Image 1 (tube, rainbow, N blue to C red):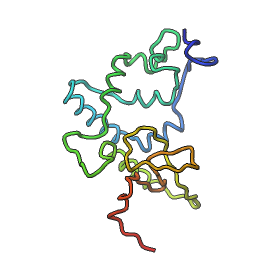
Image 2 (image 1 turned 180 degrees about the vertical axis):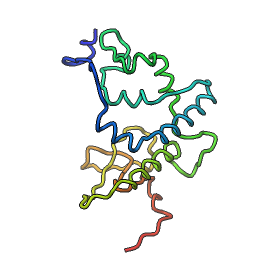
Image 3 (image 1 turned 60 degrees about the horizontal axis):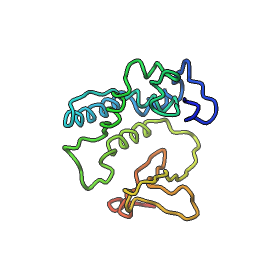
Image 4 (image 1 turned 180 degrees about the horizontal axis):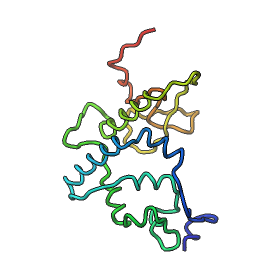
Length: 188
């Protein structure tokens, strides 16, 4: 039963609207970026299985939390916005083949080549935002537990959130180890 898997009471959502958060998200992940992701994912799928994709359901799943992915389709907790247009096998297939780069055109000098197009697109969307009159400058490390980070990994024994990527919003870049700023010229 779902209660044995989920601590506490869980009431499946009846009617969920994405609202302001979704509109803000779509400002960065607009149709152009989603079309690019669909294209490179489809290219990857064609190279492997020949199936098509629609990733919006994956994004929507991040807004409505369920105890387990299968619960979107289960009898007791079924979420129609996801369960009706797509079966669970199709979802798993999309999740397996979701891609953000063209594997036939890989820049081996860029360690972030897998996600660099998406990062640059979101960066350009951020630069289009109207600047606020006042803003704070802060540095943030995004937690990362995988062992594949290599020299990109940042470690601070006083910080419980050790991770890989540092982002500065307003503008940002992905930290790539000691050679991140190798080709950049800074002035006072």
